Image (tube, rainbow, N blue to C red):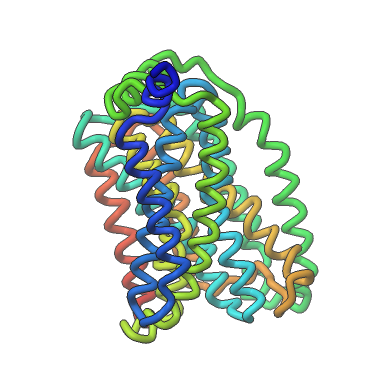
Length: 365
């Protein structure tokens, strides 16, 4: 009885339900391979359930590690699907899909996910307030990293002497970006005084989880396992994407920029909105914004350096002008909106609207 009571305190009934759904949908994604649309739907459901499990693990970590550490850890695990998807796509020679997915992931997090978080959180709690210092730090790094990532593209557009050396310039840029990321880790992990956020986190966990409390090792282990499982299922999702895309008549540019990007960011989508719903604005902001920051500072540079090893064509940081323009506009717009340390549902709705317009512009290819 003691062991049973201890387990009931660790796992709530809803925890057990989500664990069961995760197993069922993951196995279903592995088994269901026939048809053009069904494998796509099953694998997407598996990614969504795994994202919900990651969100629960973050709930139990938030009051222990602080917003910065949780954001970095969550974003690192949440970007695993994109890394695996991009590697497999590069090996298949789908460079255009990878470049679209990288910019699409940044746009989806900056506009769609953050906009949804602000809209949902503000609709329930009024104006959301968060640390201005942390917001400016993340967005400052975001602007610098996006600007650096786009240097090879600009060199190509204006036909500078560096235009014929995109591969070398991209590799040098990749090394610089990875170095900046390494230097930014201590500041991102620094825990500020967050008594209100910690209290809200504990109350939210008690409210939604029935008072259960996961040990630290279990929360971290659940994050790691579900993150890796999400990466594997996301690969199955991409395998199922081509038949579904052909069946539903979706262009490759739109699928890379929107569908693959959103699928690869399913973890952040669920976690960021859930944290905002629980009025944990600092944690939501950290989780959502650390993802595009790590895409620009880590994922894109890593693909540049890994492409000679994994096979396929050399991957460079040369993006088409439309991608460059939209990601630049989105980054500056978000910096302006969050620089005052607060946001509401109207700003969130405007961000979602901008994302819809960008996605629409790529519908025809």
